[in-house]
Length: 542
Image (cartoon, rainbow, N blue to C red; front, side, top):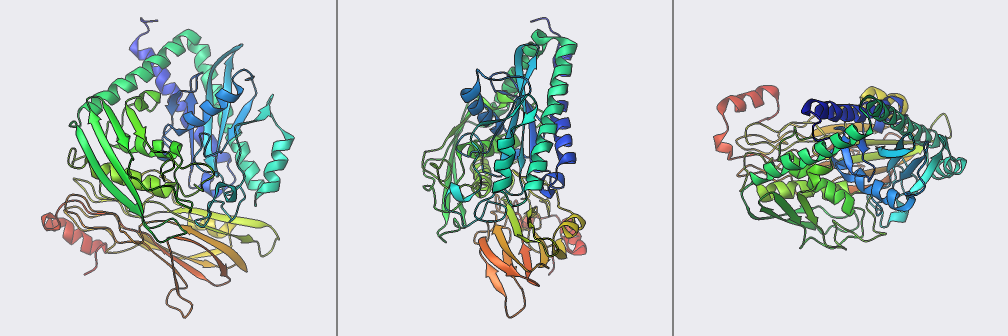
């Protein structure tokens, strides 16, 4: 096996990555809901027989390394019972998942009688029941309000979904046809991955593929250690704040101490606030993923993404804090603290590697509108991840109107929204003057005005950076905070908090104005040509 040539190892590596990518394409093309079909909120991966991550397609960064934890929970519970045709699922945030809408699905892969690995995916479901349409309301206070919680369960046997599971899902969600359709799309993805994995084994044999996987994982570890060794040793500290938890206006503090020592890096959250009553707690799985993402951003993007990348990165998150809550704390809004984790790590390491970090970004804004149809007495749930401003870099402006960092979702086309839901999009544009000033300007937030055409519905907004704009970096200015307004410029105008659940009626207008990104460097150093370009393009209005 030591004589397996590097070309074979590279072919096996790219075959596994291609399998994960093809799984994702199959999932997105067969999904029913816009959140998966249009916004592509899903991830796919291939795993070894012990549950270690071997290859992951580049879809949603918050899922980096996280599926491994969910799979290992399943292996611990069912290890002696795996059979061909089985499929296992879970969305339990305190058993390896992140929040209830993200349902993970894993299939064991057998070559003959031998378990050679697993394929798996995670997809964000439009609704899994719970207190509000879309399940992850900003006003939730415990896990039980966030929809159906699925512990590690065997849901398929001999390629057939258990009728009990189908009935349980249908009885607990608002749009059972979409949810069950998306679950079938996840099955399709796993079948694609299993087929490609088996093709590889037939072409090269089990021994060679296993050997290549070990080499690939060790190679990623070596590359990651080499990258970390390029960061000056030291202890770096920074802090960030969330607006509040949806139950209280008190800011929520996140502290990160980053210790770089040779080829290893530790991120210690000691000093972070205790878990909160609202839904913005981050389960340990999500916290780890946010840390992995931040460190991966600061290292070579060509390093293959697998378990080896994670070995030199250590996360210390005290139990009972907002970054490692104790069940049944609500955690549907775990993206809010996770975005702050990314920003705080970048801020901490700015003195050590100023050319690699970026200024603060808008974070995460999601909206759901749920009610019953006008022509049919059926539930509908509209759920969207709304774009904003990306922080400026050391050598260029931030990007405007994108979903940044951990979520990375695509734009939901206006046509798809208006065809499917009782909504009219009256405005969709970049917000001038929203990016922070600096040598390089922060990206612009957006304005998205949505007119509600139904009779009555529940509106949920979950965001952050309304009180505190995204921070600038190394002298750059703060990005403009977000603003959410119901019925702007009317007698019924109401300013909404960043975490809001309320009722809306026919004709109401919801105006979403997301935060801009922070600037980088001193504003007086901005090249005159860029100032002129900003004015011409309307990104800055005097």
